Image 1 (cartoon, rainbow, N blue to C red):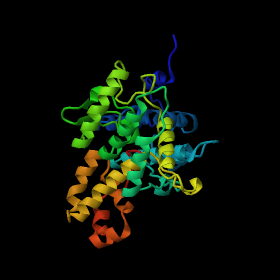
Image 2: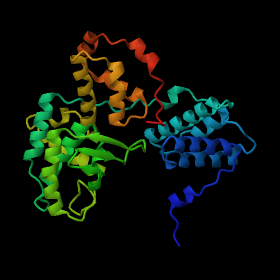
Image 3: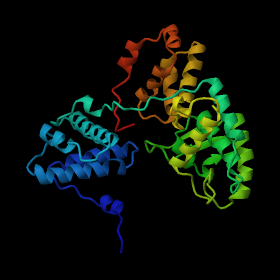
Image 4: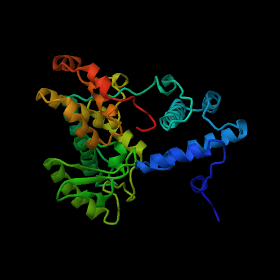
Length: 334
């Protein structure tokens, strides 16, 4: 009988001197609503490393942490920074429990090549959605024009992560109330977002066509096989739409936009609107955090840095107060 690597990992038993600490950390994360699989692979890797090189160690020492973190051959920067965030987070968790533990410096978790979000202007968004609505689509899938017009508008107007729209199931969308249950989240926490009236009406019209074309598909945005589109395919089409929206521009000079930038635009637009209305960001940010599904408020505050400089300065934002209010961003939680 074939046993998958995931099944083997789920049955893994910690055996090193850090066994109790590793299991305790995972239990704590699970109690907060996170998935065990988010931490099990790296915990098992650290456990095996300790058994092999530090069999007598019962604390997370500097030698253990730095030794395990040593860069692997052919390891991507993002994978390395992910491991660094994990081992730093483990050290901070153990210290919070009153145990001796080494916490690696923050610089290890800072990825210098972090992608800078692109914030669409109003005119760019208008041109983009016009290009999506008038694009020359594949003739073998008549639903595509309506699907792409709907999914990208939903991602933008609801502030969804691209995968939350791509994997959305049809039974998670209440077309009567406009409520969408988001379950496939980055932080493994469910949340409900509510569509605007215009978005709900568009979704109702689209769903009629989808139900006729793919009555048996469980997905709200199925591909021509009734499954869900891949992340790469969705990004590829989005890039094509952006190029179509800028037909006279030098392609090499255009920004490398991503579907995720629609979510960035949603957040920055909400903050700009509140500033224009003279509202208190301190009181409004927790609502935006919940709606977007951020784990830490610091992830929401990050969007303030994307606002136009003149708008931020004129609003008189007290950055010192923000720094006191917002804890350090922990990448392993985001």
